[in-house]
Length: 457
Image 1 (cartoon, helix red, strand yellow):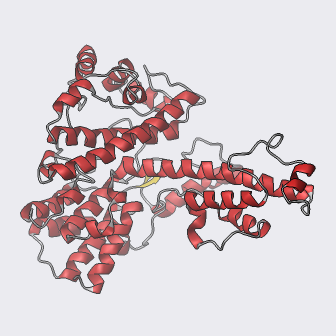
Image 2: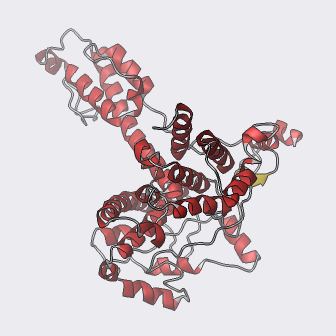
Image 3: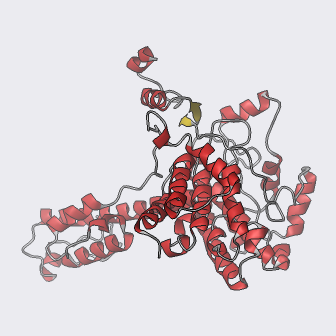
């Protein structure tokens, strides 16, 4: 049984799996956890943690970051529920978090609808409303037309709000999964079953949650020397490590080799369901404004935010899916269904930057353009066997195995730790206070700055 201090630190680390804490601050919590356990750290782990925590907010003079430490959360229906409670007399008392729970919101809409004889989904103001004689027949004769209309309109708005809330919650879940795989879904008991496991998962997840930098090169790699030092502790005590929990964030051959076929199948089923959910988001964004598959450059009307979030999540889910199928020895399935990667949309200025610096479109873009769309493959409308993907890769000079088109990603080497930069719309700024001022002034946002901001700059 852990001590109260260790329990508190483990819960704080678990909470970071759904937040966007800087890796340095997560490393500080890990250092505190080991200190509370009086653990004897090896030299490599102690040095790596010390190097990282040197830049934690606790150890900097200002103790401040200009960047939000959470993913954007959808606005709930608290205001609408409060109004419904005022207008409908038979609604039960609602708990504090009801406005963020779609199931409870829907239950309120249905219960309130019964008071005015309105069925769920009856939103047509011209057809579904009751006229005077129908209201009298339904026992609503004591309610004026104005009061009835007010309640009808509220329920119609609440259904629209519920649809938006479900969509935004889904997008947030997709965004988090695209950054940190299934870390956010780990229950506390599984996460905290081994402190070394918890430390590794929390740090790697924090690294995955880092924001993208505006660049025409590669983004920063997740697996750094701190993550590697923490992973070496798992290797040193494999029987104590909760490898099933680790596999939620890292699906290398080494990690998956410790799992039973039952655990591998459980993860595969989970990722398979998630791939279908992402495919729906991709199809929805595509149907609203089809993309230029040959270039993947953003044009007017494209929902680039939704597409890029879904594309990143798709590629993460696909990588885990490939690794699990391979570990289970189901390569014959990949011979028949070999899902392709989905590229992100690129801004025109970044594409121009690539060309000016001697680059061009990534070869993966050309491969993607030749393959069936992912949702068509998942629904069985079109076939995408491994042979089709390999042929497309050969035509465009892409190695299908090294490029992870037909095989799982290879394990990467650890990179050197670098402190997390303060970003203003993707541009690195040295000082967090300056970053706050630049963000307030609208710098790097692509929007017109007001006169006062221009004078300040």
